[in-house]
Image (cartoon, rainbow, N blue to C red; front, side, top):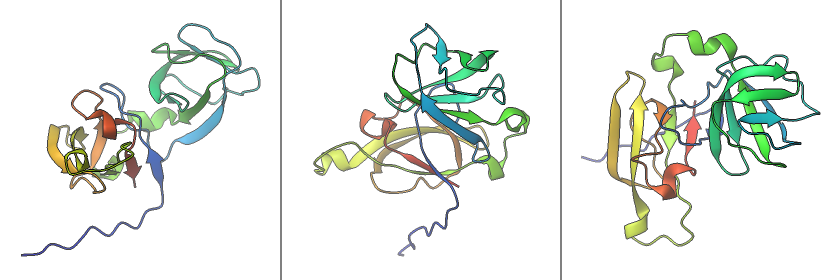
Length: 177
């Protein structure tokens, strides 16, 4: 029996940075982007930024090298203390300002579909299938082995894991709400 392809009518998409501990940012998070202006261990420093609406727990993407951390402390309106040392200078970032959104219970409305992409320049049969490890909205960790690149996972997820996901798909997948 043939199955229809998934029809996705989206209002929000986000390139995902895989992490074993940090979830995919909420689609309701307000993105604040900029470029770092100094290099300080475990900090995001941007003298032109206004971090006054950022709170502890907000998610930070380093979009220059695809790394992720969370805000541990708002030191000043231009300096954030982070859970990991992910920045040098200059590097581009997005702070996903979600505040109390992360306090809400995880349910099916907070999950996303995941489009599985790849960074392979040439796709042969061996490269067109990847392993993808995710956390579902119900909290189950699952590995989709030999999943076809260019398809959507058939479950709603909250996390794309770095460990257990092939490198080709780790930073080339897209969350869709």
